[in-house]
Length: 425
Image (cartoon, rainbow, N blue to C red; front, side, top):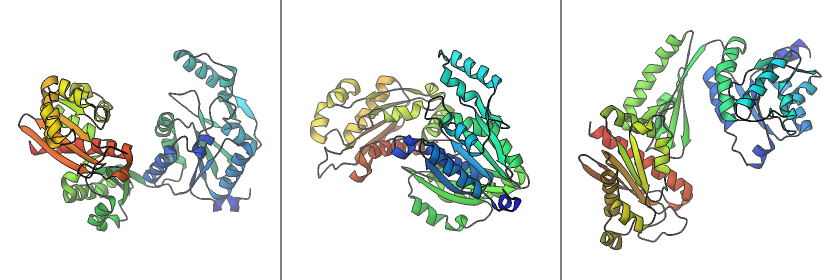
């Protein structure tokens, strides 16, 4: 390739490999995550491609990327099975022989032994890399990646498709390499602010002036029950970048108040648990329509056992009566989806489990079971604590679907508790 052609290439491309992605069996979260990481590094990223486990189509995608980009990042296709084709296809595209790396094969065998798995001959192909490629170590898996520059001005970085392995390899090896060799001129500092109880469009309207900033940039991202604003500042040093970022961070928090519940890796569950931990208090849950989702959200947080005592999944009325002491007359008079019943559920869980606080939720998740008085998407929430119990209603609507209603019920329940705790000092 002529040097003029090489200099015309620019930007970073992402190529995700796997027929399961094309079939929709697996959500392509890797591309979204990598895109955010590239934005945080300030690297221009113009294209994403998904290709199945097919040698010819994979070759074509790589050749197209060579003509367009300086850096190609691939995920998937590094395993030991016959449909894992990424490494050998890349070698074939650039007419470069594969060479076994003996140290890699020793490492792969050790990892398989540690996990009580027997190394098969097929695993050995994971120790093969094109001549001249640099190993991109995989600390937790058996599939190493590589950093390889087969043409002047073009480099490919390969990662396995397993998200946890890819993310660890990215932070430990790829980011330092990209900072040094990827054309990153400035230092970028990024922060994610998290909001709930407000729609993306409403949030964007209220912070419209800040969305127009050049440094730092502010970009919204919407999710079910949550909206995020990513702040990215650039500077010659980390300290300078933070000087640009911090005032905008402070302005957003001040303007939006309690709607902003946390930042970066914080979740509603982790924020609630930390508030309780600081107070030396505990929590229990009583769930009906969420079927354990509330307890699951809390227990995904490390050290949650210091605060979370447990919960009761009281799906039937009989269990509500037997385990949570909900009076039968209340169930007959008001129905399971009502303020009086959810209040007794919360108080029953708090007393039975000996917790300082409790959250209860009962609703109509659908798709059936709704009535005119209590339609699909109606959810009642109760938060009980040392100073009383507070109930509220949410109307999510049937269009959210069963899983959406359940997820939103968890989000709103945790947010109610968060605000109750903050209100109680």
